[in-house]
Image 1: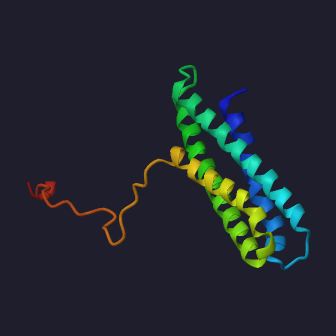
Image 2: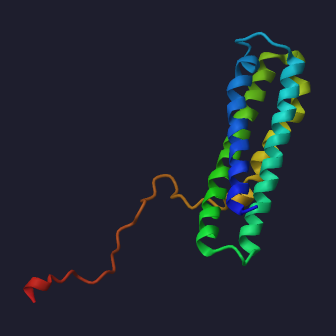
Length: 160
């Protein structure tokens, strides 16, 4: 199977996980009554799917870096898609970690049962850092593109 199709399947699974957040949130916040055991089972299923997607994505990224039979354009496109998908996985993991924290705050009696899932989502979020790489954005208050101060003076060709 081509790398593009593999990435498409991973992307759609991550998209499905993101949609699950909308389904579990009303139960986690308590705005809709539900069974805590069912919610915890959902968190288990979601964390497993998200973790598997991240592992497959890491394998695809490794394949893009090592397989010389893949064309350069497909490698470039694949790397961009990997970056997009890994950011989506990180966002999902962060959303679910926040949801679990809210669930723990709203249900102190069941808070201990949700701790393993909170740790799983945080672990998944940390696992995305390998693929995201270092943050190259400018620091707070820093210029986005500092002006060049050592460039030669502009010469207008019409005046020469």
